[in-house]
Length: 331
Image (tube, rainbow, N blue to C red; front, side, top):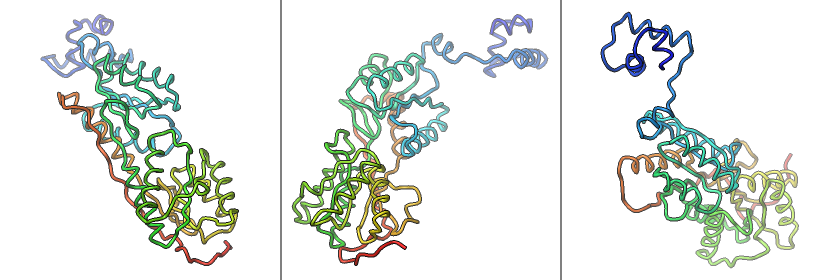
C-alpha cells in the first residue's frame, strides 16, 4: 500500500480510503490511485489487515475427509451459500480421514485467523483443543466430537424407518451391509437403527445376515455370499453409498430383481435402476448451513453450553419388491 501511495503521490491513508470507500477523497485523486492499483496489480493483504486490527479474518475453514465424495461436496455447498449471505469466504481442506493430516489442516486455517471452523472429524479431539486455544468457534459436522457443538443427521431414526419399511413389505430376512465393526459414529448409529427395527418387529438378528463391507468391491462380494446362503435374505439394507453401489452391481450381475434393496444415502440415477432404488436420504447442504449458523451464533456471543442439532432424514420410496415377489432375471 505504501508503494501505491508513493507512485500516486498521496499518503497511505488516502490509498486506504480509496480501497475501503470511506472518507473524503477528491475524484481526480481517487482515479490516480485506482490507476496505480490497476497497473501494479495490488491487492490488499487481508491476513495482514486482520493481524493489524487483532480481529478474525473474513473466512470460514471447512475440513472434510474426502473431496471426491458427493455428500461432502453438497455439504460444502450448504456452508458456502450460508457464508455468502454473511459476506464470508469458505476455505476448504481435506483430512483424508487421517487425524494427523486433520491437525495440520486445522493449524493452517487457524494461522490464517479464520473466523470459525467446521470439521467433519477424523478421530479424537485435537481440532477442538486447537480451536479452543485460538479462541475460534468450532462445530463438528456429520459426526459428533467431544464436548463441542455438532450438527448430525438422524442416522439411527432414519435407518430404523428404512428397515421398518422393508419389514412392512413382509421381509423377515433383511441383511445389513456396511462397515463391521462400525468404527465411525454414523455407521454405528445406522447399525443400531437396523437392530431397533428388527426388535420392534419381533425379528431376531442373525450374525449370518450382518455383512462387513468397506468398499463397493467388498459389498459386491458380500452380497454374492449372502445370496448363496441356504436361507438367503430377501432384502438388503445398505448402510452407505459404497455398500449400495456394490449391492446394485451384485444384484444386477446375478439377475436378481426379487431382492429388495434400500440404501442409506441416495445414489445418482437411483430412480432409473431396475427396480428403482429406495433410500434414506440425508440433507447434506442443510447440515453445512446449520453448522455455520451455529458457529456464527457463537461468534456473535452465544455462550450457552455445547449443543447437538439433528437434521432429519427422509425416506424416499421408489418401489421395492415385496417378500413374495417371484424371482425373475434381468433382460
